[in-house]
Amino acid sequence: MQWNTANKLTMLRVILIPVYLVVWYLNMETSAYWALGVFVVASVTDFADGYVARHYNQVTTFGKFMDPLADKILVITAMIWFVSTGLLPVWALVIVVAREFAVSGLRLIAVDNGRVIAAAWSGKVKTFATMVCLCLMHLPIPNVLVQVCVWVIVLTTVYSGIEYFWKNKDVMK
Image (cartoon, rainbow, N blue to C red; front, side, top):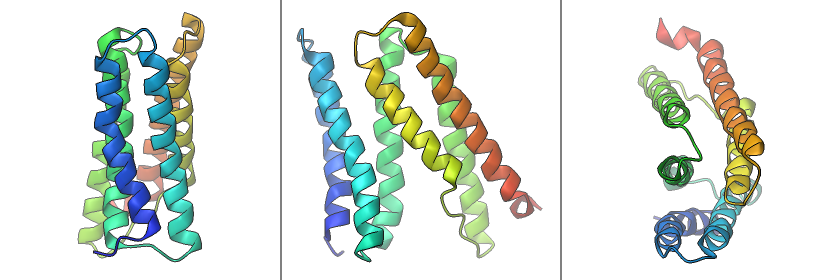
């Protein structure tokens, strides 16, 4: 495997996921801020590796596989943490996980039919909105803002999931 800059950024994100959890489990007075810092760095590597891969023609099979997987693990890890603290309702996490499985399944069916489903614009908006909301939820924000974040995450997740299936409904025939 070629360890180009984009792949290194993806692997940095993967390595930061357990670091993120360890920081939370240290249970220090400042854990939320340290966890936020780790989450922000990991989130920035998501945008940076995509830019580097496209701009410098460093797209690899490893990157195509590991980048979306790392994103899902990072986001779901943060969401599970917030479920455990009571900030995020379980139903919201279930919707996010169900959407991820459904879209991944759709992509597998498409590949089996010789077709690749590229990331949709709504999927990119969903990822960005989710990461911003999760960043905010690390801070001592009012409960009403937490609820707004939950709904932004859920609504962008549902919308992007529907869009993937609508635009690719022929794959299911």
